[in-house]
Image (cartoon, rainbow, N blue to C red; front, side):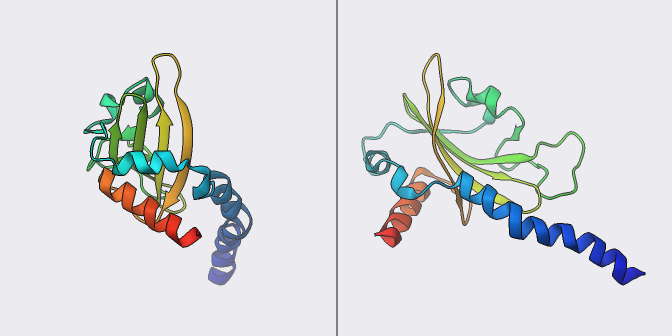
Length: 157
């Protein structure tokens, strides 16, 4: 009976890994070449005006409302399948904004903990997600993001 129960729970997990997860991953991870090289260069520019953001509530351009269900850096969040009431399902690692761009690195809980990196265009009246990917580890600074993009891009060429 125990084997039957364990098989009963294992089949949906395996099916999710085989059929659903690759489609989700592929849809959320456009190729790096889709990210304009000017965006990559802008990160490594010593004169870049990216300012670190310490809290989700400080995200500019209304993105603080978009990510309102996200924990501040270092704060607890639901990182697994089992949910704790009143905890968000995402946790911000790092964010930095310029006058019209926002880079945000965060972790998203669920079946597996995923590290995500996004670039948003910010303006007074509309924000736009320009690019998104899943990273092998959380990003903790603009330097981390820049190095990740350079390494990933050099592997593709």
